Image (cartoon, rainbow, N blue to C red; front, side, top):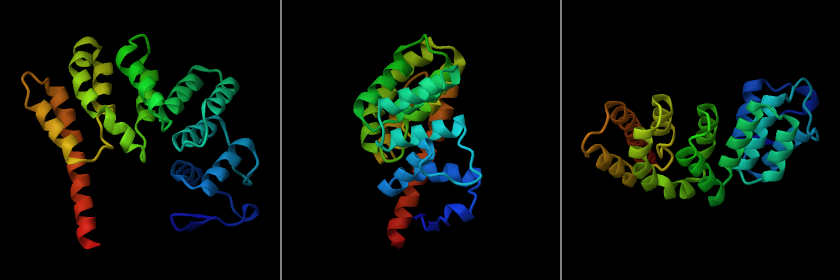
Length: 220
């Protein structure tokens, strides 16, 4: 078995370091790799010396959810196993990570409309919302982000408002249209300085990504 050219020695002969394990879980996309990840969760694929603790279990659940390899049943089962505040936040992030429009809509509703949620929860949801490989779904929320931004900024406490501006910026929708939409917002009147700074940082990141893609295409 290999991922991105990295082979996995026999389980009896190798103890995977935590950083490698987490990288493998996060990068798993093929059916073979996802089956290995699921096996780590249920014990079907043990590695000598690897401790699958609560945090690693939640990483696995979230990775499987983001890949569309599990649904609410697995998330609910893990939450029953870990019925703590932290467990509930992990579950919320895993639900937001699912590659279906209903999951994104519910995550968006909580982040934008449900002011009863603590920042610790919404921050986890915002982190789960953005997933590589889900750009087509996320593109639906680009205009909605800029439409919601003024109301969120004007009605939330500063930490919550800053978190929304930075974390919900459509950073994975790497297109010129997203950059143009950002420039259009920045060209408006009375854009608060913290918002301007975060949007410029987000736009610069997109511009670098586009330049990199262009360079790769030219060299290929």
